[in-house]
Length: 330
Image 1 (cartoon, helix red, strand yellow):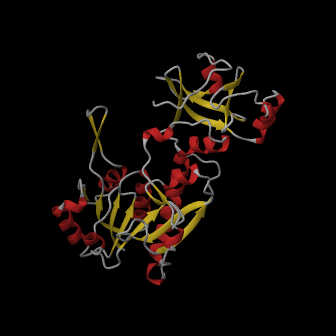
Image 2 (cartoon, rainbow, N blue to C red):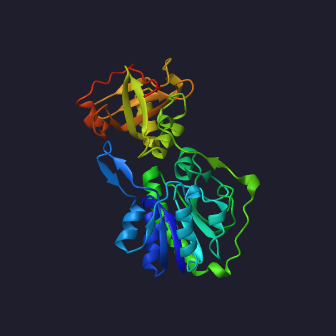
Image 3 (cartoon, rainbow, N blue to C red):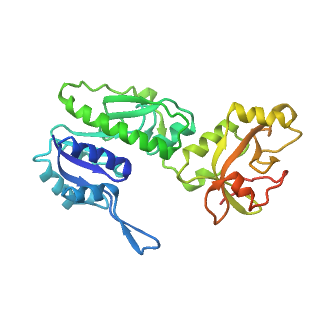
């Protein structure tokens, strides 16, 4: 097919690469503008732009497509040949006039099983709330957010992955499903979503990573995976912010805790966020609404330091039983 492709991050670049390898003709790529990093000293272009340039594909980067008449005119010209548009994590909402340009419309690779988790953060939110399985949906883009008929779906088990790991996995699966869907496109009768079953997810903010240790151990462990790599999960002791990168929540941990007489029935007035056990390899934190649950820290990051295993961290940092993590602002 002749295609206009819109996308920005690595997740989108995987689909673009697969389309190119599968012999599709990309008439035009639309991606977000270049960004400055390292205090403006270095200009960084998107992974999609890098891939497009490497393959000799024209690129446009409107700041706001809705208001950019020059960009829309280039799209009209591209769609004289391109019968379909594909959007994968582009980062802007397409106006109606753009959606109506191609003969076969625009389709989108969305990282959830629609109508569940419409919106900006389906991967993180699926992990956060234990919404397993998750998956990929290929849908028609309409004006209302992620509401269009679905051409194809595939389920994927989360399997304890972090958001970064799950995103990489879903990117590959989404690219495969996209190419398969295009090969069968004219024979597919897309399924209208049941809008009454729709759930939504918003944009993740840095402060979302604050750990509230009054939540259950399972919720905290999922939160840690959901916000890895960004924004990370963190809490404070003595106005110092520590990032937590991995917790243990397994039967082995429960047996380990019980063997230390730290089981749920003997909390001894422990408060959520209080350190209840420390040895050379790890430490354990009380959690849950009344502090009776336990969670073991496996990877942590001290202020200004790199991420490390807890045993390595404890060799250079003083952590004492009875200290307490507060979820104050970082």
